[in-house]
Image 1 (tube, rainbow, N blue to C red):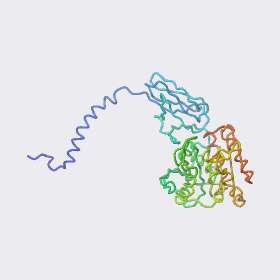
Image 2 (image 1 turned 120 degrees about the vertical axis):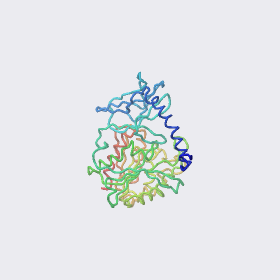
Image 3 (image 1 turned 135 degrees about the horizontal axis):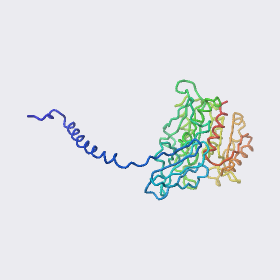
Image 4 (image 1 turned 60 degrees about the horizontal axis):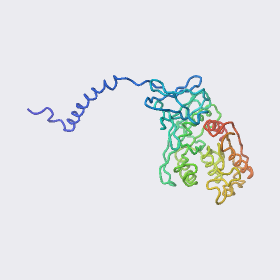
Length: 394
């Protein structure tokens, strides 16, 4: 008698035998895996109605755990967590002002993101867990029409590699065919192109402004400001690489991908810290292309205290000397609608901002300069975006 498998392909027989041998082993293992002691349930982070925030991590064999959350006031150096008898480390912070905050755990000297939370924010060159404390209407997630945030890959001929940017399109963009003004929004030295939409809450801030009629619907482009490794005092990419990539590759990509208006009166640029310096490096020599300029917690690096300013300060012409023609171009200056600075009074770059504003005034510019409370943190930068965006394209 022939075997009943005579007409069954050999591969199918092998697969059946493989499954047959695998299933009992898995089934036998199931009781041991699922029937044994279960680890304690861990909820982290937990935000209470009164804005206390509790962080937890299960680490029963660990000797010490700290919460690292530098943007949360009073936690710059880390806070010691307490281990419970169930092996769960925990800490509850006093009520925190509404906002988004990055954090991680230092577990016996190793930085660990929160394994119980999917909310994350990228920086340069790290990833952080993210907690949001509601209560600020301008950046809360509300029941209003929302725009779309997308991560976009483009090829930079300048840098000869692929690059990433983030783009925000306002509510209703996909359903229409009209063109929008465009706002280029740059991040700081320890951030990346993800940062403005994660910890910066840019999408929600724009949604809330637009639905309230306080800001004009616009496309917001958030590029990657780093073109190579970055460390203060260490080796870094050539200073103009980002500017060349921005003008030669990013800007044409945006104008081909999005329905944006391309004239000067419908183009804005702003940035925080490193991004503020990059904003000036791009906008001043090309002032005929940008009618709105914003500088948050920044200015011309090195200019304070009589320095020459700019990358490579101390050798060659100063930043002011390099841009003399643009700074004194009366025709370009007439078309500038807004030059806006804001820096916290406790910010380590406050003197840089003051010196930059004074230099621009010397050349006939009329910058608006707001000295706010606070320091060099996202607490201020979200507020600055909320104040700056309504002034655009009006």
